[in-house]
Each structure stands twice: as C-alpha cells, then as structure tokens.
Picture 1 (tube, rainbow, N blue to C red):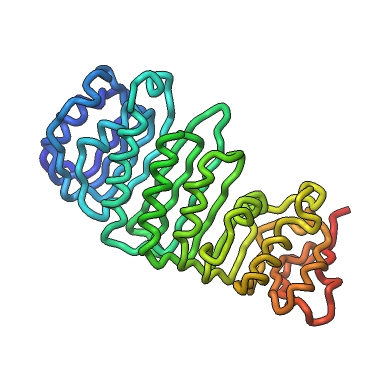
Picture 2 (cartoon, rainbow, N blue to C red):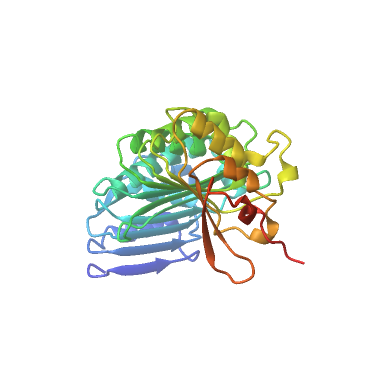
Length: 321
C-alpha cells in the first residue's frame, strides 16, 4: 500500500475506514472519493490524528457534508494541491449541530492551501438561493493556466457567508484581472457579504456576468467597486419589458452610471448572447466611444461598432422570423 499513487473510492467504504487506510499511503498523489458512507457520525467532532499527504496533487470529493467534513478536517495535502469538492446534502447533514460552520472553517483551510503558492488570474462565483436544494462546489485546478478559482453556492447559509467573507479578504490583495459572476434569487440574502466581495475585486478589467446580476451590481456599484473595469461581457439577456425599474434596461443603466462616476466601460461584449432575443439597443449610441460587440444573426460574423460614429441603426438587431 505504501507505493499507491492514485485511488478511487465509492460508497462501498466507510469514511473512517478510509482515513485509517490512508495513513499507510504516504506517496498518494490523486484521491477521488464519491458517496462514501459514514457509519459513525458521532465521531465527527472528536479529535483525530492528521493524515499528512505531502505528495497529494488532486483531491476530488463528492457527497454529503457528513462524509467530506472529516476528510477536509483530517487530511493535510501539499501546498498547491488541486481540489474539486461537491456537496450532495442528506437529511443527516441538517441533524448535526455546527456541522456547516465547522465544515466552512476546514474548507477555507483547503482553499488557502490550494491557492497560497499561486496568484490566480480569474475567479468564477455563482451564488443563488436554492429554494428546494442546497449545493456547494469548489474547484481549483492549480495545474491550469491561467488558474481559476471556481465556487458555486446554492444556498447554505453559514457556509455561503463564511466562504464569501474569506474570498473578500483573500481577493483584496490579489491582482485578479478577470471575474465571472452570477448572483440571482437571493432577495436580500448575503447582500452585505456580496457587496464587500465586489469591492474586493479592485484589479479586474474584465467582467462576465448575466443581465440579472447587473441589477445587483448597480445597487452595489460606486467608486470603490471595479475601479479598473473596462470590458463587460453578458452571458445572457432578457427582454427589455422584463425590467420595470430600468426604462432602457439594466445594461444602459450600468453604462450610464459608470460614465457619470468617471469610470466608463470601454467594451460591451454581447457575442455570447443570441441576438434574435435582443430588443433594439440603438440607445447605446449615446454612450460615446463605447465599443459594442455582437454576432450577426444571418452570417455569424462578429460585428464591432463604436458608439457615436453615426450609424446607430446597426444596434437595431435582426430578429428571427
């Protein structure tokens, strides 16, 4: 067993048995764990000796908190270890006091261990209110270039708050240039934490987001939010009639706001959206020098239009029959 480098373990094994076996695998490099059993949840918070895996390069865990909490609590990987962790909540998760809070603390240790030797260039954060479900995913591939931090939260209360607070503190000192953000359905939940997170992204020049998320960004935006942002890419767009608060839609509202505070957006990228679903956007021509990029519906060519150059009709997008 001492020479094993790669193992994959499923629900046939109890997590306690696994930890006992890992003590004898000091050279382990890759560990994949899927739906382990936890036959003795009463020992979750008991002290247990660390399992130090100095050669571990990848840890993949998929299952409920009751199985991956002891893993992140006990296993100590090498600095820069890639992690891929996904929850699959069970009723048992909710019956154990302090499980979510304790899991948060140890998960943050793992994230810090993974990213500490590196300077990630891109963060992906998706956060939504899971009315009928809960899920958390954390993916950090330290071998990837450029390196991404990818976090998906659906909605664990304590876990979500703790992770976002940690990210805000971590990102404050990191020159991350690109971000992908999707925030939806929270209805006031996590507002304070998420606004602090947005302000911590002080180095980003490129933001990809959904039109739904723009509504939240507008409410949080000021001179401390995205001071170096130059390029905005939309992953999805809704009909203009969907926005009662914004007569010309949240895109125009954000662009005007950024211009008013002296931090104008230079590029609006709509190439990821279906132009057949666009409303006419010739009003963008009022944002002088803004470059609008979109894909022509008929011939699939990319169009770049600089606003204020006299042909706003190109922003009356072609519709499907």
